[in-house]
Image (tube, rainbow, N blue to C red):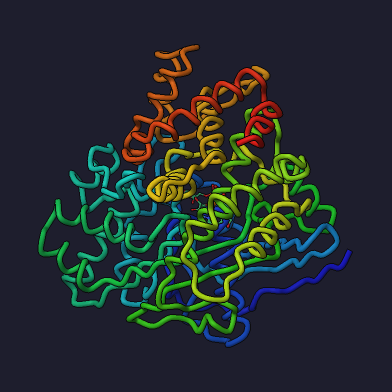
Length: 489
Ligand code: NAI
Ligand code: CS2
């Protein structure tokens, strides 16, 4: 194996970035760019304080115990590995609920960090649901209990929007210029959506504060890309065999991309030298990635999971599924995109299929299938709606919707059960319970969820019919039957 080892910069630095959402992706993406920047320039201003607002407290403490150093294993393929040590994280904090049920262990420390003039950028990977927005409309879900708690006790915030409102308020009162808020989650217009959540929450507290945030705070959008699956026991064992006994390590692909709108009034690292694309408008790249990469991922996730397929690579090795993803990307996703000149979407589609075929990653389909209610509007449904408005059909998306509806039953086509991890899981369960074997009633009830499915799309009779037909074929004839029925459409 070609193995390259890169050590972290030995110096520790000042905290200039606060990150919300210390998960796998942050460790393998934003932290890697900042580490590479520190190593190249020796500039110590952009160290990171990384916080979890929910799980996991274990990672927060275990990184602290490891002096904030960990390894990122970047696999180009099974024979080509770079082991990169990261040292740019300077502090980790936890503000969620601990095992004893107490909230906010490090909340005061995080609030102080965010309010400090040294903090110039706040990055977020809190997952789509961490913004508390209605996925279809992008409006703040102010009936959510967590948001209600932040409205009732704004000085003890529990959510990401709540933390941002409280600390922007403190900065405003202290005359400290606001930090830049950089969402790195897979949401459409992620900067604009983050602004919407923060401004709407601030409005409940103080309209003048809300206006100040809307006018003064920069919320650039960004497109982020690197496949970073949740770690498995097998990943830890594989690293241990290379002499890496690191409970905080992450495994990912070698590919990495970050396209960012250049709006950082308090300055930023010179990221361009690390390959970050600083642009005026991220939207075309973000939509391309969401519909092509993430849309294919979700299609594979639901069809594969209901058929008992475990990982992305297992799915992609199934020729008919690979062909389906290529067809979906070229026939249903690419035609909806408006890209700048020079972007070859067919080459992009093929590069994605090659990345999915990386057999060094065990990317579980159940992980991708999580939170479908928050993901599907931007991955499939906005594109399908655009096609309907142009008089075009979307049979691959209709099959995907059928698979998603079937997936939310919590049991695959062979009767194996699994937990459905989604903020709307209870609603799904009630719909399956209410409609049982009445597939027409069930499909109609799912399409009527207007916080997920755009109303215009649900109202399109031919789309609704093709979801129902696909649902019936999938449940009666299985995956192969559904895929061969699709071929004739
Ligand atoms: P993870 O499961 O390792 O971490 C999830 C993080 O989100 C944790 O820090 C958790 O505390 C936080 N979180 C979850 N729900 C929250 C809530 N309601 N409020 C506040 N924080 C919450 O997942 P991972 O891999 O780090 O992915 C996180 C997000 O990063 C994804 O949802 C996606 O938007 C983005 N991303 C992930 C990629 C990947 O391949 N893993 C690639 C591109 C983007
Ligand atoms: C995946 C993404 O979990 C999911 O829903 O589709 O996290 C995907 O791995 C990344 O967006 C790749 O950049």
